Length: 521
Image 1 (cartoon, helix red, strand yellow):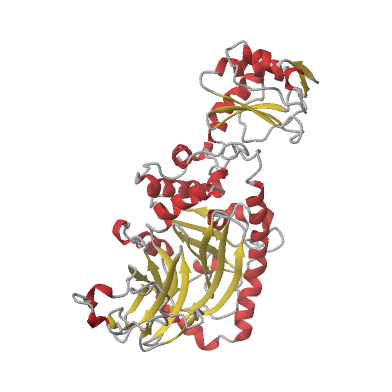
Image 2 (cartoon, rainbow, N blue to C red; image 1 turned 180 degrees about the vertical axis):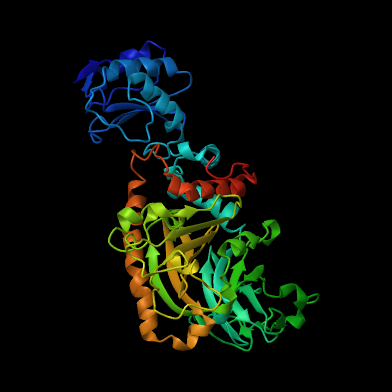
């Protein structure tokens, strides 16, 4: 059915005269459209009429919202007409799609719309949208606004208020086993060096020389090695040198300068802590949050990763997707039946996952039991899954540990997948609003280190790389689709509770407000 109505006339009756001239290519003053394709949407305080079929034709027409609810109702009434019975609407619209219900849907869902080509929400508006989303119970939870994955200003804000203020893992202690061993990386605009000192302490420093800001690990051509061994740091520019504990030991000829105090020019040490062999850093030492790992330690139960050792690394390079997309994908198993239908779904069906209750704002753990089809045995009532590498199960792990694929996350992006024979550490480095780097490390228990050879490492990544490739292809497409005008509303399945949990974490970091809403309530 097709309806003809005068959109300008309807809105003009309510004193809305700021529409500007009709578009010459669409002739909006008397436009004939399918009544169910013209949808009113409230986006960033403006009413948007969108033609869902001809995005290049009718496109979107926006007017200031102010108090135009009545005009919107009338416009919907003119445009919608009767609803054909054979039209099916997305499940996220939990009301029948009559004209009145479209209006209610617009007010309830689309106020949190995240993207429009003509207008981008302010950062404060996006934070408020996240807060409103995070307060919802699970049965009405919705995804994050799309602009939180796209907007460079929001990325700068979350980098300052979330990523730099909280703790992130950048290394394992076994990567610097001896005095003078170091590794380098760039993390959130900070050039970093992790080094083991002569006193056997692992420390983290900025690589910026305190003289005129050259890189203290670079050679004279500006090249920075990824790892190595030094007995001290020496800046290649003016040869200022520092001990491995960061103390300035030589500032060439600076004794000529009256009042020069070497103690004021030690390297800047980045606050760091070690948990089970992982090196956490916090780039904002002046306004940090505590590194609380009690919940994760308890939920990982029989695993003590201080007894595990790094044996392999696979660099996936720079991925054109926002870092949060990858964390969200990692958190939930609901996508197993789609993205991993031919890989891990048969072994670990996603809908069987037991997710955490969200009681701790920083920690999420999910456990997916092995299927009867994929199990290799039943021990003490547990269906035991095959190991990834066929390495022996370490001491202290029992049938319950061998029966699940478990993932653990300490927000914002410390992520582990752990099996009895192998643990994978996902190392994410956000680079921009629309890109991040991914490196996946493999760890084995110290009792199995001598059994590890190239074939074992190959098996570890032959299992994981295809799974990641499946994820990456979808995430890159999602990042592209987020720029669409159709990224509004949405809904979360109960298995996606960890995504709501992450939203509550973001609220905690962005507003310093702890939402007292836990679990699926």
